[in-house]
Amino acid sequence: MRIKEAAERRISAAMRIALVVVLFLGNIALVLLLSYYLQRHVAIAFFALEVVGVVVAIRIQGTRGSPSYKLAWTIVVLAVPVTGLILYILWGGNIQQKRQQLHVVPLPPHKDYERGRSLSYIDKLGEGFPTWRREARYLHKHDFMVYKNTAVTYFSDGESFFADVIPRLRRAEHFIFLEYFILAEGRLWEQIFAILKDRVNHGVEVKIIFDDFGNITRMPAEIIDDMIRCGIEVAVFNPVHQYVNRLYFNYRDHRKILCIDGDFAYTGGINIADEYANLIRRFGHWKDSGVLLEGEGAWGLTRLFLHMWECLGGDFRSEYDYYRPHGPVQGEGWCQPFCDGPLNNPINPAEELYLQAISTAREFLYITTPYLAIETSMVQSLCRAADSGVDVRLLLPGVPDHKYTYLAAGAYFDELLSHGVRIFEYTPGFLHSKLLVADGEMAVTGTVNMDYRSFQLHYECGVLLYGMSAVEHILRDIKATLEQCREIELPRWRRRSIFRRLAESVLRILSIWM
Image (cartoon, rainbow, N blue to C red; front, side, top):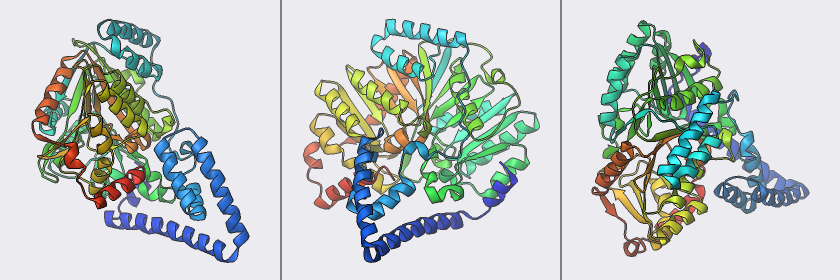
């Protein structure tokens, strides 16, 4: 992190948020004033822009990309033609043109033997689990290899996750990489920071990436300065103050990756903040999950961190091979780490993976997610699966962290419930875990929520697990979580107020910006 960036961040969080709000409202006010002026004083120009708005709306529908994204912008452009057109030019447009100021570099290359080995693993996987060969081949085609010789440990909460992480951090000898959406000041961070400083003093390479928007009120500038002074290399993803004029901060690095010495790599829904380990209570009990990959598969996650670090302009002490695992580990089954993000659009591996899993499941499909804001195609896939006799269950928070996301999720319940999809709310608190398990054979875990932001706007990561004991552990955890949930019944749901129904419908459209 450069000195200039560190100095800029010394502005208090309140001032930075205020600046963002003022600039955002200023942009809106300017657009409205311009629209009013044209309508009152330049009628011909105003009419011409209305015609252009209709043309743009037609063009939006003809572009590739998310139907929800296109629908929302079409409504804005047609409802308020001039204002909507100007807003679309400022903040909409082709999603490919709204990339952050990243260095567009390829993922670290695979060796020829790795590609061949991955294909052989897929063939072997297909013999035991033929229904899941399609998912494996799809991700392989998009440069995400299948790995064997990997021990996978599943953590059903933040407490057990950090109980495993912290001792391994203390034993790090070569490097520690952290990439997190939230890296928050608190008891947990103090403990980890002390370890990182000690490891740096012993010559360990420590690099940290964190999302600026996710930490705007959570990580004081003084702590970041301390990190830099003690020798930790820090990269801030998408600084808010640099991109407010184009709403670049709408794009976020939502990934959670922790890599140690090449042999160990963690991911999951757990950020580094006290609430994730239930050291503090924000929304009741915080239910989350994570996994550790030890061995061959750890490279799949380390590779993703290396790539993001290079995209942010960073470099490394050594060549890629230095960061690889030192040897295979005994482990059953196969794993396949993957990532997704706006640079891939309109190709979205995470969303396609979920769609394929829903359509492939034969007996049951359980999904946990803190947010639900999905495309019509995914709603239909869930409904078709339930209509076909698949036991489809969605687990959502009973205590939401954001009221509007909770209401937006309700817009999907009526259709899903009427087709036999069962929906449960976790009553002890906030369910932040992101899991999918199908037929007891395949599971997905990582950072991907079932919402538009994860599928279109965020940088995400995850790992598929095939034929591993960790899949059974995930299934047992979901069943245990179900015992702490209340089921939403269709007759009771249909008795909700007209005002709630209206709010749900509006928020469903607005969810692409939330």
